[in-house]
Image 1 (cartoon, rainbow, N blue to C red):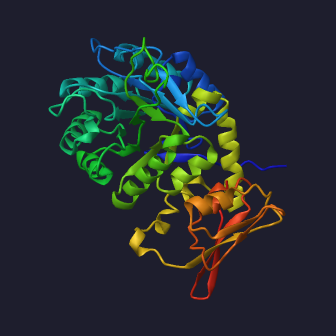
Image 2 (cartoon, one colour):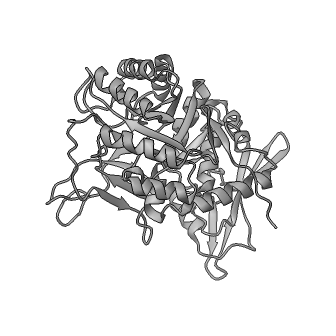
Image 3 (cartoon, rainbow, N blue to C red):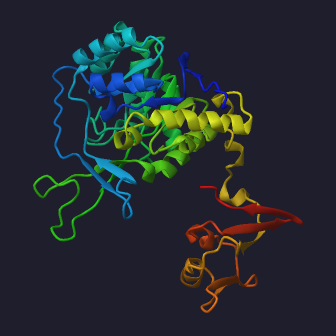
Length: 411
């Protein structure tokens, strides 16, 4: 019988029964949904971003669109959602209610303001409601704060530091996360500004500005509102590689706690986020697609992984991959060739097609036997053949100083 493993963590002084929390997004915009998420087993919620009363919230529907190959429609999910239409008066009551009903869960709230008074008022009211943590959305187009209109707050180093300081001044001992955007030239400078401003941590990161698609017969952008559309915030598995790089860059260069957010779709993704420096992982598109029940698989998968790896706690994962991330010029230069496992090869010919037209013409094809063969004299070891093989029958053999290493992706 499988013995349960303790997957709890401490995050900014808050005990979480797992590293998995619901991010500030549609799944936390209604009280009943937040309750159901916590009842299902999520470690905490960050209620959808709120603002002061009187702040106009101009939502347009349909607000969602997606893309994906063939039957997978939601590899990427775009939305033109803004912040919650529930203002702070509603959210502070929800915080009180949820804290009373779920005393052992993290009840957090996300805020945005357009002035120092707004930011600090939101913080003071949430503190009075006994919120566990405050996340600040610096990654939605939310006014200029003295910068260029329409830009995100975290796209300005100076504004990021200044507003962070305002928020932390009001929050005092209540933990503050600053949620940034990856849509900047230098994410490290933004993270340094957050740290200088005094925040307790950083949420890395958020959706990525995008255009999900265009109807090629009507030329209407997706999502379409009577033929017109706007740029979307892209989430889901499509942005995971960008989030991984964002977290890793911050973790390698700035000593600050990181909450991972943006593209995690299963427990493996979550482990990757933690391996490059995140202390916990926020989820949005996954429960939006498959429901709150997904927490069961997240918890079970992580428990099995910890046991398999001999780790006593999820904390042992944090930052474990960082030492292996180098600059390209610092990498070793092994002699690399592709190697085909004919016991697994199904003779589809994809490796031949990819190598012939996209590699270095190092794979030949026997059409009678339906068998590919690698010419090691021509193979440079680019790994394109391995990427297209549908059954993982190809691995890369790397030789360096008479030592041999095999590279094969485990999916």
